[in-house]
Length: 148
Image (tube, rainbow, N blue to C red):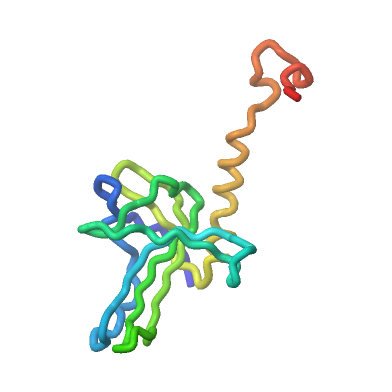
């Protein structure tokens, strides 16, 4: 499976497009769709914690805490008359960048961990950008700039 960039439009903080996912069975009792941000959590049975995005009148509200490198899941499932899952389609990717009008997501991946691995260079770059070089602290030596 080759990952690619998907430019998904958002309007006023509302995601109005999603990547192509398998169409659920139209003959089932009901269809449930979702978008969620995922992150590793060793306290969970499957090792993942999810924040399901709230539905809007047109799409899903993008949470304020979404950032570059986040893993995002787009899913759909069909339910039978008892509410049991009949079919499920899941699409995992990671947020490469966010603009005033779009979220660029790289995917699909066959598992959220593959998305984490693909996003790692971007996340590492963000971490390094937060570190000030000792030379950037004006007029002080590296030792003088340390606070204890």
